[in-house]
Length: 480
Ligand SMILES: Cc1cc2nc3c(=O)[nH]c(=O)nc-3n(C[C@H](O)[C@H](O)[C@H](O)COP(=O)(O)OP(=O)(O)OC[C@H]3O[C@@H](n4cnc5c(N)ncnc54)[C@H](O)[C@@H]3O)c2cc1C
Image (tube, rainbow, N blue to C red; front, side, top):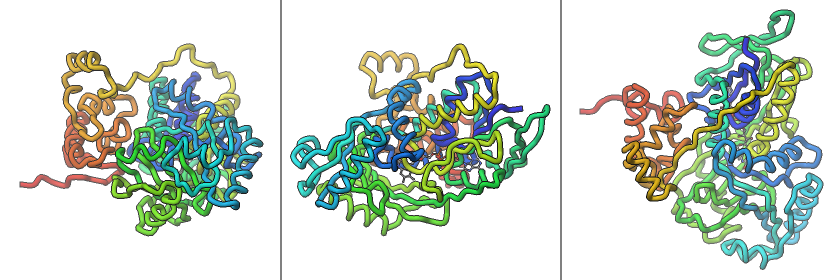
């Protein structure tokens, strides 16, 4: 009998698994995809929000402010990057200024530290590329940026280092209540016929968290998928801003943002449009045109010709407008982390701790482990000193072979992320873990080399290697 099954290996499932792995218990994380962090966690704005946006008294406000305060230390613990950049919400009119005041006051009620309304000159001094048409801005000093999928992978890697199990390609299709030794538990059925029995279930299934909840609870919930599209610009544009530049909240949610990413690119987005298909993450000419038109109001000299990638993510918008966190009232032992729209990423560390505490209390008599294993540091060759580079090449010559020329990633780094716990199995999986293919050529040069390395390391044929999702074959057969 398993103690806890977590359904979903996004940032929510990862955050609770990371915390639970600190205790002596048997944990299994399931995901329907062929890799972890393949849902919304890999397609969002990557901002750790300060917390002035959500209404006072909501779970979103509470967990956002708590989570943001926890991020820096958490990222140190798991060896993931984090940068506290600060953010600005720009006002262009008296109407916008009224909005800044509302956000400021809400932030104060939510106990957000380092909030300040700045005048035009103060903003332009710090962010000289911002439009001179602004009148004021709300500055939030605690806003940060992360690499969301990398954070998720590192949390799961650590959970596995500390004896949690992850099963990918494991789609949950049914949950039943069972009784064992006079206690209540659950039988989870997977699409391929496998079954697992567990004492506790955690629903962290993102946009599908309504379907998982509705399999077992009579308190039905509904998730409306809302798509957000983005531009990623080359690092040449990286100096446009050092922080996160928002406009006032609008039909686009928190407002279209322009931000420097943790790796030095510029991100522009997102749009906001309700859709029917929960898996649709394509881009539309309409959405991208809208982004171009709106974003240049914040920074006039963005050059969209330096666009290297577009993507879209799906928000899990719950019909109650807030996060759904905790034990289902009618199903003891079944815990929801549902409706995790933004600021879900920011809130995840706090929700992970809270959820783990509730589960430990529910199970009773669970001890913390005496000793926890830390993640083995992940080398980025180009960050090493010349002496360190020489030393590592002497030890393993594959660190002397550059595979991705845009991001300067070596073969040694790629092999490492394939061989690690929660290792990469797809081309995109390697990219998520050490970035080959994230640069200007978007894998045009290194993609085939990454496929070769994956095939060799995994003992597969070249044409069995997929780009990202199941069935996304890159090669079909040998040519002459
Ligand atoms: C456009 C956009 C911008 C955003 N920007 C920000 C931001 O800047 N800051 C912020 O704090 N938040 C942001 N968010 C929100 C944040 O991205 C989400 O809150 C967070 O990623 C949700 O994580 P999750 O683990 O709940 O979902 P996911 O990452 O989607 O994980 C759910 C997992 O469950 C799996 N799953 C689903 N059904 C099943 C099943 N039947 N069986 C097994 N597995 C299943 C999926 O495969 C998936 O891997 C944004 C979201 C979007 C869409």
